[in-house]
Image (tube, rainbow, N blue to C red; front, side, top):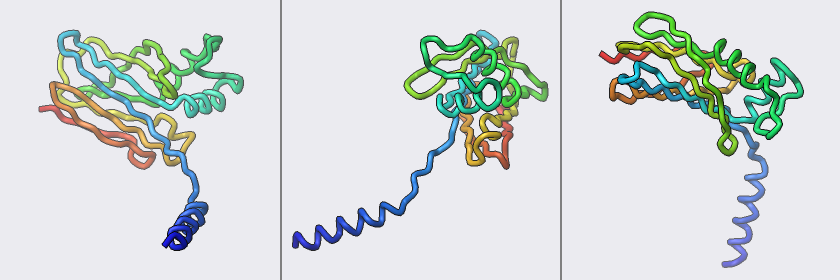
Length: 167
């Protein structure tokens, strides 16, 4: 009986050695409408190593994130990149967000943005092409909490835009 267990373990080990390790490329962006303040608060969660690779390729090959002596240019680079890759249309009108900053939590960069002066949201169109130019299998998960309704969708390079209605 123990010989059978040994053979099974050897078979499993040999089969698993042929499996390739593949990293999953994903970001999660949360949109929360705070009606009392007239604000749409946006939080993007991006893996630090992916964001660092992107910033190095696009802006400065010496950038290192999540260090005590991080370059002051990092926030400007992140703001510039996100403003090019993240688009918001509310009730048919293009809105620009204000980049508030970022912080690190474990291996995730949390990037904070907001759009002010919003009296109501009947519809929102979100484009998110973050990291699509770096990873062909990147997926960007969009989560919303607008008008007390929660909705989500996933964007991929072939489908980088989603429209939600809150009527």
